Length: 72
Image (cartoon, rainbow, N blue to C red; front, side, top):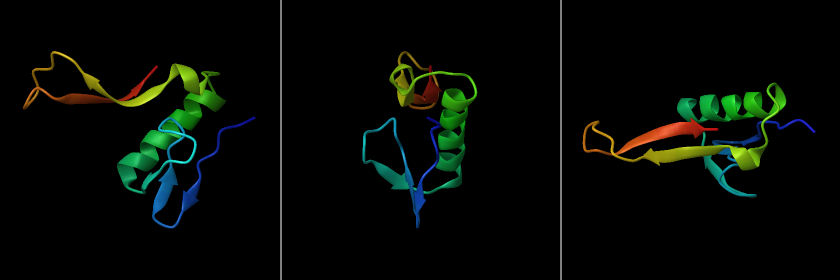
């Protein structure tokens, strides 16, 4: 079964965040959800092997807090 992007008004569903988690629909979030769908639908990854917005440890960027948008 294909993973589809779900949008309701100004919210977009984030399946990696939980069963019923909706985030504010920003361009960055749309790109993130599109890429998650591509990983699942085109490349065969399962949601359980993907995470989003993961803090990267030992980062030297800015205040030392860098985030990876998607981790497989």
